[in-house]
Structure formats: structure tokens, C-alpha cells
Length: 177
Image (cartoon, rainbow, N blue to C red):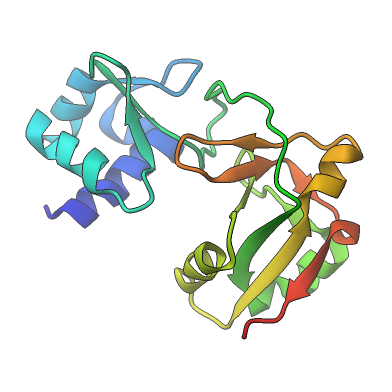
């Protein structure tokens, strides 16, 4: 299996379906590395390569590399121990056109994940949107205004901003140049 395929499978296991390889995540999303190696039928060198080379830095080891977890993006209920953080004035969200009507009516929802994922820059939001099939749509989020109104924000280890919901009153469609 190549690194990209291993990374996708590790994401599935650590973010959504640990039972796929017969493991359980602890309350903070950590999995035992030896169980991952056994369940995925890979060695430590391959796992370290997946973690090091993942372009989105989705995974993290604990200090002694006996445990591993996804930094964010979970659909299974875990607490990845994120501290509340003051966001910048503006954040961005990338999606596709077919979601635009629902977003305009209901806002940005976490759907089957624990949080809505936001980017610190337009280019990252564009890359997120480009992963899906369809015309890219970027939203500009007035994050600091939301925070000042009582919404909580977190930032994962890989820089992704997270919040539970973005009401339509706090964003506008961003016109890409």
C-alpha cells in the first residue's frame, strides 16, 4: 500500500471507524501504536512515514510514540484536548456549490463531525474545496466578531480552526480573484 492509501486508511481508523481494524480509541482519541501496526499490517517505519509526510499533518504521536491520534476531523466522540483560543479577525471555509443553498439558510454546520473546520487563509480553503467534485465556493467568516459574541474557537495542532457552528449572519461568500 502506498503512503497516500495508508494515510487515508489511517484517517478512517483514527477519525471515524476504529472498529475497522478491531481497536478502540481512548476518551482523547488516542490509539495504541502496537494495535495500529498489527491491525493495519504495517511496521513502525511505515507509520512514522505516514505521520511525517501527511501534507495536512492530520496525525500526532505522543512523546514516546506509543500512542497516535488524529488531530481533528473526528465523527466519533472524543476530546482531543483543545484549548479555547481567540481567532483572527477573518477565517475561511471551502466547500462546493451544491452545498451553498443549505449553507445560506442554516449556516456552516459540523454535520457528522465534532466541529466545523475553518482555514486561516484563502489558499487553504480553496484546497479543501478542491478535494470535492464540483465548483469551489469559499466563505469569509467574521471569526473575531463571533468570538466576541460568545462562540468558542479552537485550533488543532496542524493549524485548522474549529468551532461548532457558523450562523449565516457571520459570513459572506468570498469572491475568488
